Length: 458
Image 1 (cartoon, rainbow, N blue to C red):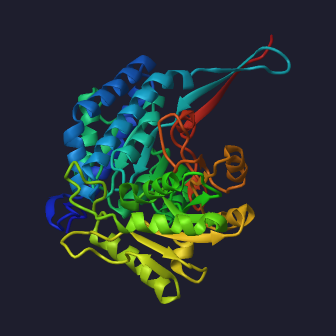
Image 2: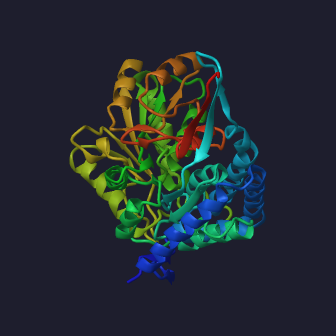
Image 3: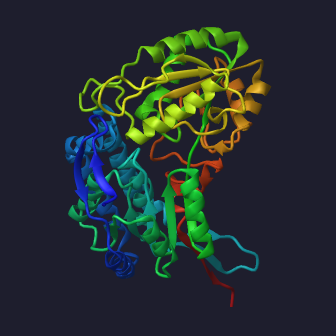
């Protein structure tokens, strides 16, 4: 039975199946990537830039059809799918424009005189392992900077996103990227381990769960391969005070419910100071309770299904565990009575450390709300998580919010806004949320050879 198939989460129907890669195809993909690297690394930087600009243009030209693919594959509301395509085009344009500057030689001032240059050079074929929740964006974050750098890419996408995987590969081909510089591969987990271990592959980047990250990191470490891991998150949304509670709650709903709550940077733990807790909880619960997920293919839909039946079952199990151990279920907690992977938006309070919802990432439309007495307690609770990806701090006093932000153990913090993303801002976390950074100039600083070229005085 094939692992790669499109199952529409809005209906549960299997739409199309695709053949898994054979071992011979895996070997061929590695060889193609290695041969292509020999040419691509020596290509002119303006030529790479031109191709990436063409990639961006093709995403924009095919925006409607590309968005429809991921809406059917993983249930993202069409309006969000269109936004994802726009973001991807921006990422490719960003690296096409800024990449040449990031590749410029760095001249060092050294003792003893002479000349010392640090040159940014590519390292070779790389493996990317990407998830289903942002099928185009996750790939762009990895592929755009590394192709601009001169590396080549083998891409193993999520088994539930084969159509988007093929669409990405076709866009690269149509933009004029040389054969083998980007290879899509419907590989198995065992084949992934083989690819990482191959001497011709120089690194691996994974976006996914911390469990998957541990497995990939172990194989990469054993084979002395560089890795970047963008993993889970349990982002805190801290409310210190509010002069406009309606606006704060609106941001909280957006932070929790974007992509149906299926984002590593989604706001998941709402930590609210006791002075404003009751007002926040009442309005936030009402807003969450009023949300009715609908057909994601409609342009008017803001919230659709989860990505799969198994995703719904997993999230409800976390909610049931909390309620059974004494948590208060304020709204939701169950499936919608209709076909498809639909779940009512959910709010939990009184969650304690013996509950799964306290420690685990909840990858779906469930918000956990905590009441704390002051900023010190808010910081301690926020930092108690094993994760450290993003976070948000809300206050009428931005300086006070920044003081709290500075003490959060996360890779990213946003002030008076849910965690977001854009091409020119670094993305990544600490602790169990991963290793390394993507986007901005940092996205071109991971899989590189920072080569010193030294010419001493005669």
